[in-house]
Length: 250
View 1 (cartoon, one colour):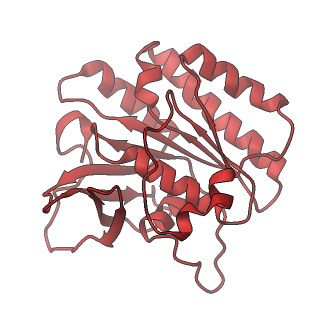
View 2 (cartoon, helix red, strand yellow):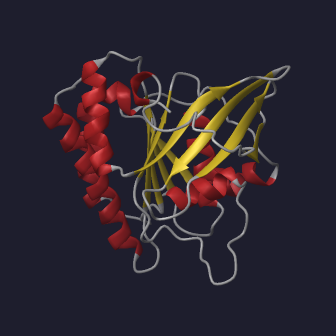
């Protein structure tokens, strides 16, 4: 779902000539960042983007309800878009696995986008490599099942958010290395110098060879509004290369 997130970070710019806003053929995407780095806000923005494309509903899985809705543009928070986002709150890994397994029996319109926030909370219950691999494979299988139900040219995308940890946490590093096999496309979030009354971060999209590497500055204002601008590229700037800082973060 690198292209969906790319459109979010470009604030949903329309597809160019000969292009379609579709999830078909896009790899699943892993959204990575530390605490408070804006992962949930970007997931919600991706949900709004997909809900406005005139396709199926969006399934948003998270352990607890969102405390507030991130703000973007007025059009993004149209009631019709919000109604197409289905929130579900599996409180444990067991409940999450049950929900994903039962998706094959669910009737009604298939989701056009599957989102999971807070993967690290579920992995903390069952941190073994076997359990991590099983959950990752089940997420991919569920998205593939939804894609089959949606039909040709209308695949179901998958974006999963994972909180990265401090350097030296060997268990977390092993989990991340394993997840990267299932999620070759990744978006890394890193805090940036804030402005007055602002929280800023740097977003780097690594689409695994299926598109150009891209970077943006994401700014959250005190009123909750989120704005996105292209990152000013500088020659020799390698500060956001993967693995150059703690916990494998950029």
